[in-house]
Amino acid sequence: MSELADHFDSPERQAHAARLGMWVFLGSELLLFAGLFTLYGAYRTKFPAEFAEGVRHSTKLLGSLNTAILLVSSSFAALAVEQLRRARRGRALGLLLATQACGVVFLVLKFIEYSKHFALGIYPGGQGRFFAAHASAHFEPFWTLYFLTTGLHALHVAVGILVLAFTTLALGRGSFGPKFIHPVHNATLYWHLVDLIWIFVWPLYYLA
Image (cartoon, rainbow, N blue to C red):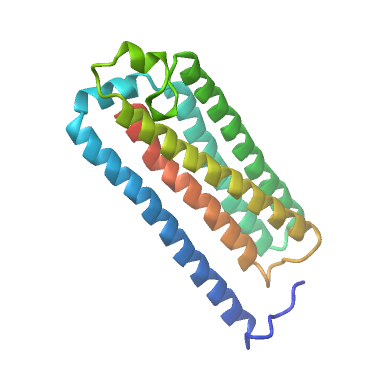
């Protein structure tokens, strides 16, 4: 089990500081995506028909599958923390691995989705034959924001997988337990953030 850091006088204070730091970080991440969602709203107000057409070209099935995958993964992450609280380290390890597996599947489906767009001539920055065929329309804002937002989110998913992988390795070595759970809790909080952001991305770019 990990020892108390020198600059804390109790495990409770150490856990509180770690949780507070994580929440501040999560708040900054939310502000980043809030800016992108605000841009989406502004441009959609200016180009409503073009954004509606962009949504019609989105891969709704893959986007919806990825939504279900992230929701399931968040359930696994929450259950992992609960199992660790009950000193069931083996089950917690299995659930964390399942969470990471869901993240990998999400990224694979996202790669397939991007491949479908590229096949239609839709590339970031308004490049490709799709935009050449619709030169008079203003489709660039939608697809620029689409690739920027979903690409940034995919990057967060990849980082989340790495964070959970390191957490799983440490848990396997016995570094965490029922009395030292906050590092695992913080790692799963980051994963829940990834899920929460996608809950906003999904209706904006796939359903609206």
